[in-house]
Amino acid sequence: MQEYINVAQLNVNHCGAAQSLLQQTAVERKIDLFLLSEPYIPSGGNADVDTIFDETGKSAIKCCAGFQVQERQNPPLSGFAYGKVKGVHFYSCYGPPSDSLQQFEGMLEALVEHARGRGPVVIAGDFNAWALEWGSRASNRRGRALVDAMYMLDLVLLNDGLRSTFDNDRGSSYIDVTFVSRSIAANVNWKVLDDVTLSDHALITFKIQLTSGTNRLLRRQMGRAWDTKRIDNAMLEYIIDDLENPVGQVESMVANLNLLLEKTCDATMPRRKTSRKNKPPVYWWCDTLGNMRAECHSARRRAQRARGRDNHPQLIEQYKLVRAALQKEIAKAKAGAFKELLTSLDEDPWGMAYKIVYKRIKATGGKGQLEPEIMARIVEELFPKQTTLWQAAQITTGEQFPRITPEEVVSAAKRIKPSKAPGLDGIPRGVIKA
Image (cartoon, rainbow, N blue to C red; front, side, top):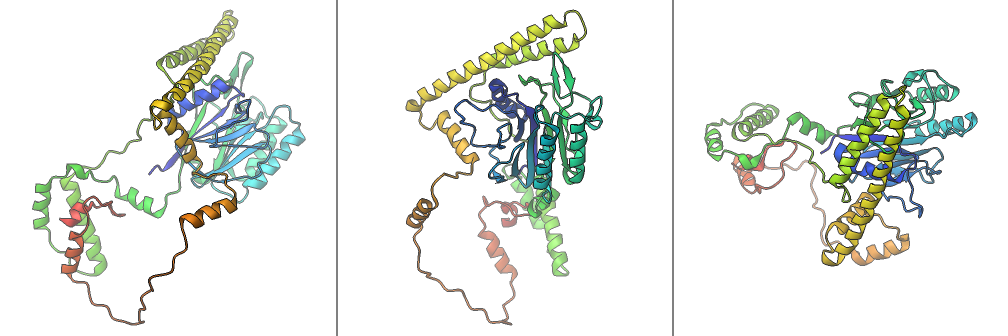
């Protein structure tokens, strides 16, 4: 089971092509969750079902990888979107530069009030605030207000100030910031990437370590599971014949037996290799778009390196042309792929179109918009009430139970199906059965 969340943070600048490009970025970078400022919302208002917006629609949280939202703010508040995912409380924020200082401080007060008492917390976004703490040349009043607010929540700043998060032909700045609780601040691998985003803002990525439950902790202590398909049965029989029955107290006997089984498994089969499977690209992605994105990246780097030189304006114009061409090609590719999906429905109703729709429905947890009365009637029809046909056994206090014999243990082990999943100790059922 995945023990961390890969998070990406970006101000999309209301650009549809930039937000579409994020879909392919999520695949290539294995992103699980996006924290977006100024997201793109289609003219019809049909936003993704797996996206949480604030009241203004200028900040959003978008879940990928089938992650489900455990909690959200309803009705949404202004200035920040809130969602609890995998036990972590995420806040995606946006502070418009047009807001007055009083409006900005009011948004921060609402944010602090909502986040207080929750944990662990991630607060990220474009606050349009300057502060020396995250690399700005000077601190302004908005920056000092933001620092004070995050201090009240005892959060840790992840920005290192080494690279700007906003860059265009007029200059650069550090206005996209990330704060997290101290409990998850270690090993976050926060960084500003050089990827093409089709936005003036840079893509920020970091990793949140999930709090391990008891079962997951035990499995991690046990290490990787064994590959039972590569077991050496001859070696297993040889080792089993030479095993000695453990003796002593019950607790020590159990511990020694588990240790013997682990050593037996290590000697008869290798451990499984753990790796995250590579996901296929989004359905409208193609090699042409990949090449154009690489060309756009090169044009942007040439323009950045030429800043202050005579040819800088010309290189900026070249970059804008290449970027516009990429945006146009993305829109063309999405339109063409959508038409192909519609055409393929008659030939293959369970094909790509079905998989895309099913994935969207699954991301919402399969929750519909049915009225409670209708839902109750459906449940009553599908699951009618049954008369209890059994009665709990009556156990007399102090009743003596017979001891379990070794023969009974062997008999129970023989009844175990070899394909049954192992328990917390990870010992394959085939080894116990042997």
